[in-house]
Length: 117
Picture 1 (tube, rainbow, N blue to C red):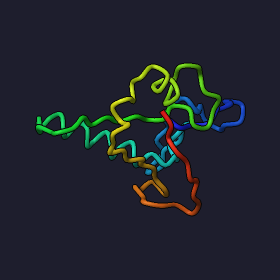
Picture 2: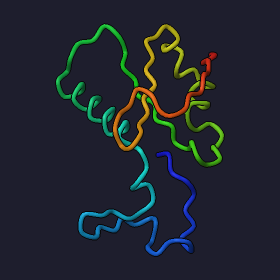
Picture 3: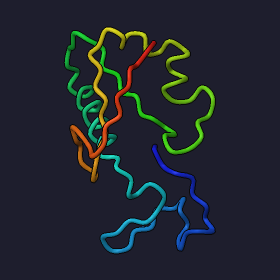
Picture 4: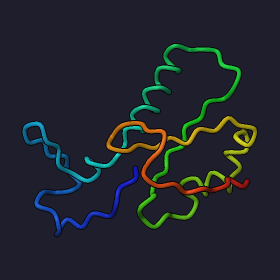
C-alpha cells in the first residue's frame, strides 16, 4: 500500500525482498507512514474476533496506489464506480492517515475536499 515505484538498479539491496540487519529493516515500503493501516487492521480483527453487535456497518478502505499511476477500476475510484461506497453517504466517515509512523489528527498542511457520490 502507498509505495512508490522501485527501480532495483537504484537500490543497494533487492527492494522487493525484506532485509533485516540488526534492528533495521530494508525494502520497499519499510519506511512509509503506515501506522494507520496497522491500527485499522488491528481494530477490524478485534471487532471480528469479539463479535460485537453494532448498529452500523464498519468498512475499511485502503488506498492502493496513491503515489503511482492508478490502474483502472482499482482503489476508491473503482469502488465508487461500482457502488460499493453508497452506504457511506449517510456517514459517519473517518479518514485516517499518519505522520511519523503514528496516527495523527492533523499534519503540517491541509487540503480541503468534498466527497461527491
